[in-house]
Length: 134
Length: 96
Image (cartoon, rainbow over all chains, first blue to last red; front, side, top):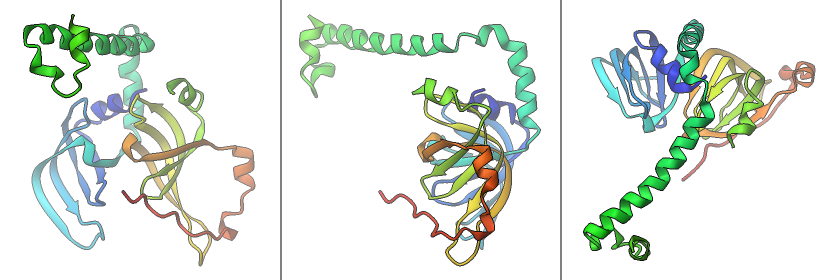
C-alpha cells in the first residue's frame, strides 16, 4: 500500500499534521496531491511548545514541510477496499518504476532536441549537453 | 532499495526520525521517497531519569525526508525487554 493512497483515502477525515518546525495542525483533510501538499478545513494550529493555539477556517500546507501525519485507524481498512477495486490496474508496481526510468531517458533526449533548436538554451551550465545533441 | 523494505512490510519495525524520536509499529507500506505507513504505532520516549515511556499513537504516515533508520523488530527479544528498567538519554535531533 502506498502512503499517498492512504492519504487520498483519508480525505474528509480528521487528522493531525506535524510539520518539520514542530507546529501541529489539526483539521479535516479536504484534498491532497502527489507531492503531499494538503488542504485542511476547520484547523487548529498548535505552536511547537504546545502553549499557543490558532483557529483558522482553512489552510494549505506544502508537502515538503510535513514531518508526519496521524490518521484515524479505520482509514487503513478503507484503502484495502479501494485497492481491491482497482486491483488489476495497480498490480504492475514494478512497471511504474520502469516507466519512470524511461521518463528519465526521455528527459535527456528532450533536452537534446531542445538543444538542437536553440543550442545555448540548456547547455549553458554543463556544456556536455551540446555534443549529445549532435 | 525498494526490494529491501519489501521484506519489512507487515512486520514490526522501529523507525528513528530526524528529530530523534523512536516509533514502533507495523510497516504497512512505503514509496520511492521512503514515506512510510506505520500502523498500530507507539512512540518510545527514553529518559535518563526514569524508564521508557510508551505513548500509543495509532496510524501514521511518516514523510521520507524525516526517516533516519528503519529496523525490523525481533518480537521475541522485544517482549523480553523490561522497558521500565531502561535508562537512556534521548537521541538528539539532526542539525543541518
